[in-house]
Length: 79
Ligand SMILES: [Zn+2]
Image 1 (cartoon, rainbow, N blue to C red):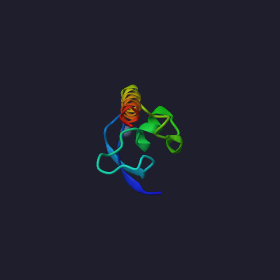
Image 2 (image 1 turned 45 degrees about the horizontal axis):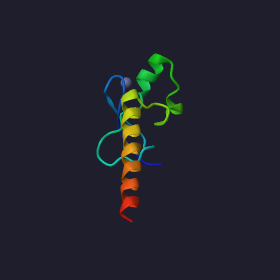
Image 3 (image 1 turned 60 degrees about the vertical axis):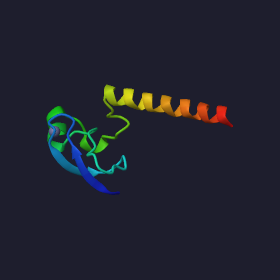
Image 4 (image 1 turned 90 degrees about the vertical axis):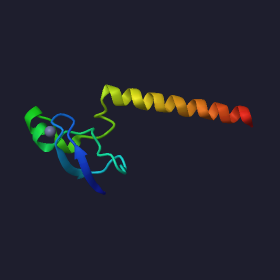
């Protein structure tokens, strides 16, 4: 497992954690730092990107999937 810099979803501080999302340049923003987890009573080790997506991120992935579907249809129409 690789380790990368993350940005806390709540306090915006930077911390290093396992890379679940295969990031390249932009620090992931889906998890809470250990301090915030302690404060909110969340199990830090149980955080996963697919559980921690914000509404905005969910919307982004939905749109992304929609564009992919449309491209496939375009491709099919050409062939
Ligand atoms: Zn934090």
